[in-house]
View 1 (cartoon, rainbow, N blue to C red):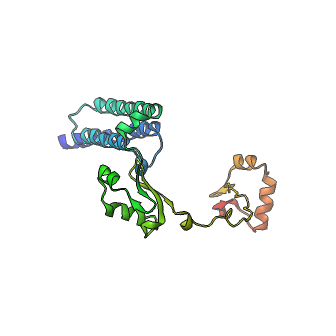
View 2: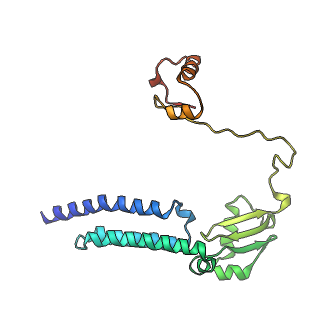
View 3: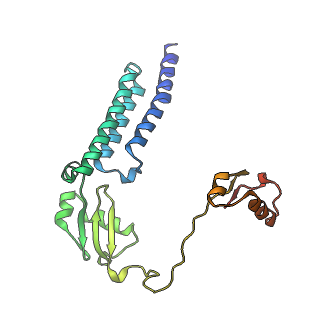
Length: 216
């Protein structure tokens, strides 16, 4: 009976703590895991440790975990604003972008400072579809640990501008019908009427909206 009680407590904690973490995370800002700087990554690890301890040990007061999550989120927001305002602070608690390749040559002193091996950088270059380091004009390790590359001018892809061709404007598709439901707000935004929509459906020999999964 005691085991069932503890399992119910654990289940209740999971149900209550996940929405709280989701809300705090959204408030902290939308970024993918691969784009997190070092400080934010540590914040995520701390989140996991706090929540993991709370779920694993029912004896820990649940309110303490909730307060800890909110405080950690507030700390991250404050630090992020300070980093934006004071760039020197950002360089102290996060990795600043570091040049590791210049004109096809590795900057070994910067690699040592970052504790990156030559093989690490060469692999990152290959992952971007470049197999000869001489094709790289500039390589920079960003704060999130990813490698940004500027190719040699002679190795850059040819653009429409280079070929002096006229570029047509790109258009954006809007869903008018999704799974049989007409989106009136989209029609209004596009300044279209239901009569126009019915005419379009007739052209496609569609008599029932339920037959339409997606119409752009």
